[in-house]
Length: 150
Length: 150
Image (cartoon, rainbow over all chains, first blue to last red; front, side):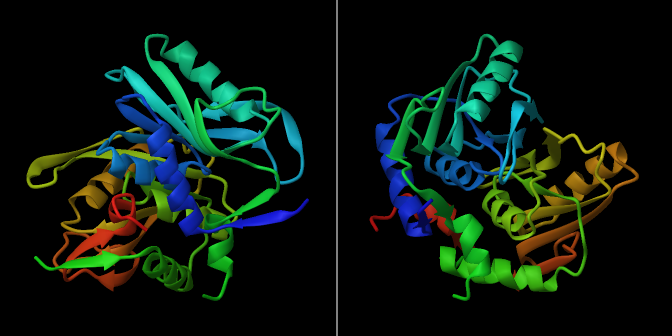
């Protein structure tokens, strides 16, 4: 599959587009780790939201895809009414669907919405807001740049 | 206080220096949110560590400093032996000291070490590894760039 390098500048431009699209107010941001971590930090700063949490999943390997997705390190959300879940890319949608499923069961009174930089057509669940359709393998700067001699 | 803009390029260069300094192997990375989130994502990718967690603290306000620091959203670390705690800056050291205190009590058998991009002289605790001494107010790219017209 073709590879598309996605620089910090690309990311910043798309993160700005994402904030223009998100027409909703929320109390906290939940990053799906690792993919959503940088994005959550910039969005937290942009929206002046200090309640930036993360959640972990297992189930997606470099080459194989396990049957299920396990969600763990669910953040404490007792005083939260609305949370934006962020990730870098919604690929199959398995991870996002299971994160929503787990959070929805534990916190049925919280409204969860989702945002990602990339989405793929055919994902089992579409994020509420996203910026680009992924048609190549995205080589994100957080993966690539530490190996480059800049 | 003078302000120093800290760009993504500055960050990337320092993150690389940090990896050259860290002469230790660890099983997982714990980001102190929000400050350590981006750094944890790049380090997780660099070390091929998928176990990147976050931890939250309250106690540091824009202008005032509360008496204590409350630590919450402690990650599940049952199978972990060694964890690197990361943050952007060790300022007074209150946050890092309390994170170490809380984690050490819950997980007395895990070795915790700490890394940050910046440290301040006079902090009550020094990180095991860091890159720059902060002599100005650091305006990090994750705070500044979303507001800039680039």
